[in-house]
Image 1 (cartoon, rainbow, N blue to C red):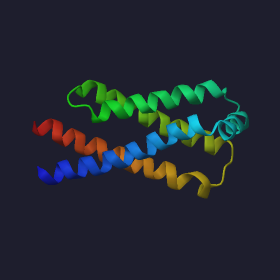
Image 2: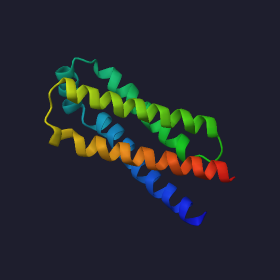
Image 3: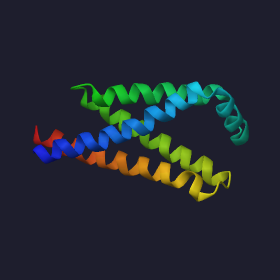
Amino acid sequence: MKSTKILFWVFTALLLFVMVSSALGTFFSSAQSEAFAKTVGFPVYLFKLLAVAKILGSIALVTPGFKRLKEWAYAGFTFDLIGASDIFINNHAPLADWLPFIGAGFVFLIGSYVYFRKLSSAA
């Protein structure tokens, strides 16, 4: 049980680092974000909305209780990573530019979710 908690928090901390750093990058790098939004053909406000959702999802994961809300946060992070992968693939971005970051996000997401479920079923 102790190792399950440790692994949950390691994966969750890494996942939160990916999500929060991505969200903060959207808010504090407006010229770069606007250029990227124009490149992929999305409005800038959509990325800001996603950044707010990432921060709220991150808060949900570290708040005690609220199991259903955590499930929704995991679902949202999954959709975000799938959508980001799709954007990069459809814009023919080189794999080296996005695969390590997105791939790590998926590994952290899956690891966090698996250990979240183990902790939930043990409780």
